[in-house]
Image 1: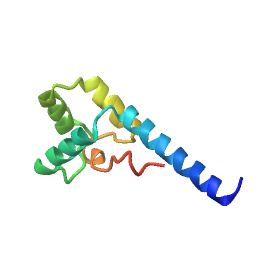
Image 2: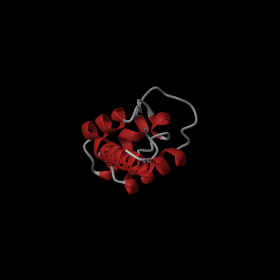
Image 3: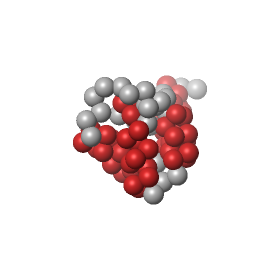
Length: 92
C-alpha cells in the first residue's frame, strides 16, 4: 500500500470511528451543544460525581435518561463536569 492509499485508509477509519462514537452517544451534535450550554449556564465548575444537571436537562428535553446515561458513559463521561469534555469528533 502506497502512502496515498494509507492516508486515505486512515482518514476513512477515523471517519467511521467518529460516526460510531456519535451513534454510541445517542445525541445529535445540536443536542450535545445544548447540553453543554445548559451545564455551563448552571455553573458546572466543580465535580459533583453525579449527573444531577445532565439528568435534569434530559428530562426537560424529553429524552430517556437511561439512553442518555449509557451514551455519555460510552464516551467516558461519568458526571456533569465530564460531559463538558465529550467530543465524538475528536475521539480516537
